[in-house]
Length: 133
Image 1 (tube, rainbow, N blue to C red):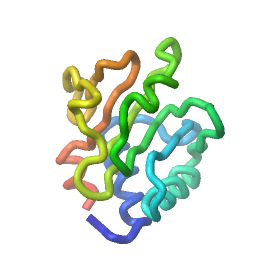
Image 2 (image 1 turned 45 degrees about the vertical axis):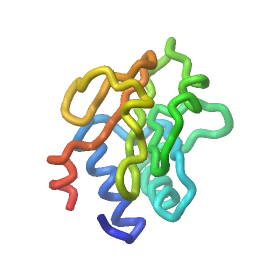
Image 3 (image 1 turned 180 degrees about the vertical axis):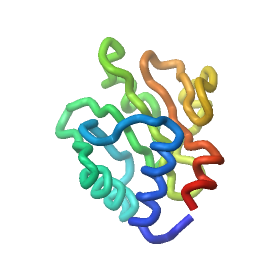
């Protein structure tokens, strides 16, 4: 893992894209984390056309660079709308405890259903990680 926040952010975005095949441009995002890596990730996502959420706006993608309590966002997430994609983007180790999210099953490599309606967890696959280095 690179200690350079910009290289790390690029790796996170490439692994996310490789794992999910989801678009980033035009999507709303939020980042749970406040260090230089989170800032670099926000700048990169904005630079490729994503839009940071403002106020109580709901993100399409939630990138977690720190540990996160799933109840923080699940209480604000309206399951009657589009799904929420929660991305484990920890700088080291894991930022998301699968047990706390109630991971139900793996839908495809690195993408998991959770106990929350329309909330999916993305943990980039080892193949995607290998390709990003």
